[in-house]
Amino acid sequence: MKIELLPPIFSGDALEPLITARILDFHPGKHLAAYVEKLLAQFHETSLIEKPLDEVVRIAWKKGHMAVFNNAAQAWNHIFYWESPS
Image (cartoon, rainbow, N blue to C red; front, side, top):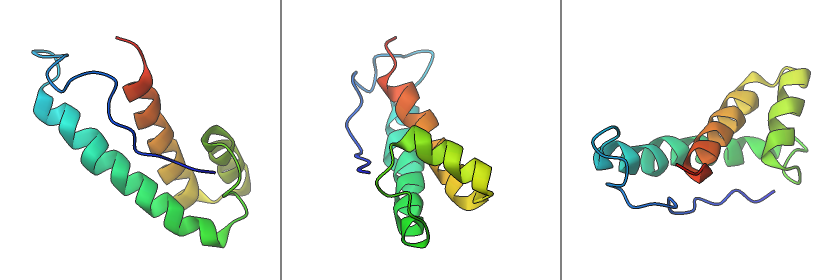
């Protein structure tokens, strides 16, 4: 599996005044990056590296790998949000 931190599909100020450019920069640059970094570090403990992210979420939950589940689910949530059309 390859998780890439792609740039947002819209400019940082596109959602102002509802969501500020600071928040839009902070979430993918800090939150998502941290979840992905932790998740990739956890893959050495599992056989999930070849799976799509949504499968990683489901499998980790079923197997009780809560740390993997949390980071995968948070990464999925952020990626889904940033890739959703406005």
